[in-house]
Image (cartoon, rainbow, N blue to C red; front, top):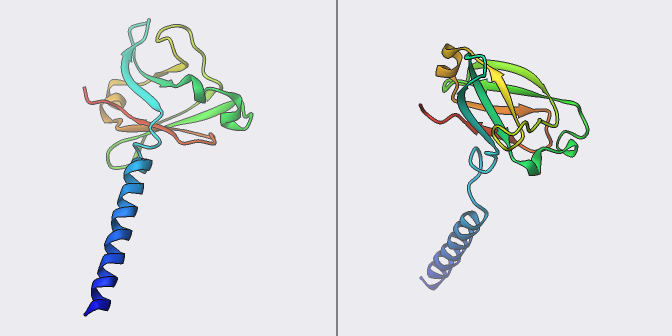
Length: 133
């Protein structure tokens, strides 16, 4: 009987310890790698676009191991590719918004289907979800 209680106590301590570690390190998956801001926008020419913004800290040549381009892949909720494009890296900052970004042309139908996007060719996961709207 004592041995079972000791085993139970050890397992309980391990479970609490692992739970605390997971809570401390934060969530895995999409949230931990969400480093792109995605917004529907209208270009200066009046056409719809997807505005893809990345934090300054990631907009460095080292993020791509010096490669001059990255891929942009956007998928719908079912995981089907909706949009694919290549962009020069690092991204430019033309001041609107005041962060490195790209104005990706996209049709209204594409914008309606896009759920999430990621940049390919980077050493860190750069992805984000498009806010409903």
